[in-house]
Length: 394
Image (cartoon, rainbow, N blue to C red):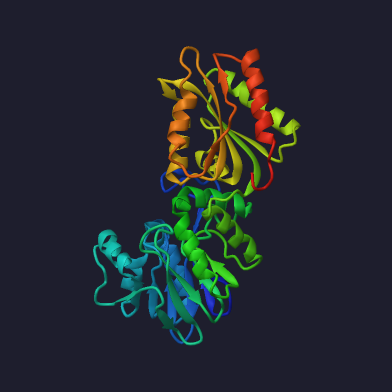
């Protein structure tokens, strides 16, 4: 029984689907599961690229044995040491004692930490520019530090023009589920890799020097059509540019008065022709998606009541996640609510002030308990300001 997939005559997909996981990395909701991808290159010499999560090592090993037939692998290439990709190293080493382990020097340090050994008797340390000939397939290695761990390498196969991209170009979701690539890839990228835009830009520059016809990431589907689309999105995300012209209104509300203002503003923006308006209740919606949308749109409205002299906890968490991921190049507006102390706007602005290239809207909305004639007028003024320029570069 064949329990692997063919990418080409000589390259096989050995990965697994995980529908038992609820939170990826202990924090990201994955209702459609995850994939842990691994690949096999069959040539005069045989190379395996990465393993899988510990809960699926036996399934992965059976996939590998089925694809190998009677042959034995010569190399295990470890591109990334995060445990969802490296948990099978030990069982591979035990099953194939003559195979060499290939990785960067920092990866071997992590192997010692995670696995108790750095395989010093059978390791091959590689660095930027090193190459490995398997026969027809010639592999070259590109260093990709902080995409998104410091030990990461990616691998380019010049024969089939495939980039094995480690966690880059990955997404949430198992392979047996149909869903939009961009939405789950954006949520994955911004949440996990978003802080390291400069490092991703460096990797994209390296990738631009080779002819890539297929991208094989460690999560999500193999990409072999319309690669310009995926590369373009990664360039937008990693340069902190605006993907979609429009406005995200992210809010928290205790008794509904702040929510009322938010929904009214959203209606006004739509009536004025704003191309996209998304409203996010930070207390109830997936925080990772909210953060991803803040990076997607050109304008962000933050609306929250004053709470304990500061801001509501979910808003505080949202802002922390934005600043941790180098939020920048956006217009930000504020709606605050307070029955006896209006301090939320000042607090939110102080959190965001260290961010690069933020423009704070001139108009703010100050609600004292509930909307009144004055705060309604402020909403009108803010809507006009936000809609005056909503091009794709907004």
